[in-house]
Length: 147
Image (tube, rainbow, N blue to C red; front, side):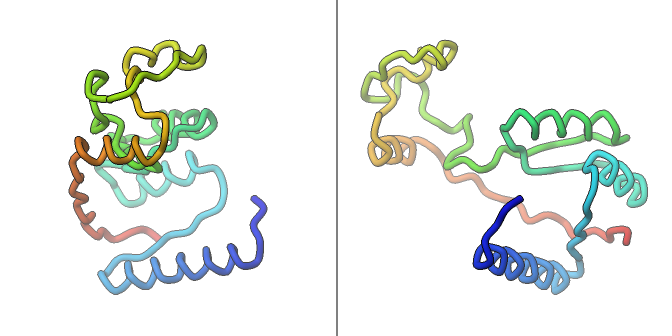
């Protein structure tokens, strides 16, 4: 991963802040390097975890890694959609958009759902905000983690 010095400093500062905030609540931040499937299965076993959760990424490599982790852990796995402005299930229904979008070959399966979606970001954001609820985020319970 290539990162510039200013971005690296900002990242290190954010991680240090996250660790301090977790410690203030009685938790901690574990940082590991290596194969995530191996590391997470070991942590699940050591902590006798009853569930494993993570932030879902949509990339092909990330989805393949998620499947590898799921196949190795011995507990239920839940993931949450992230890195989007809105949860996909909260976007307006196909008949709620106000403008028509030309069909794109790469969106063949989505064309009926995307019909009428605003083309410009500002118009799209206004339409989405008008119909999408604000989802409440529940603060996770702090648990002891293995070292």
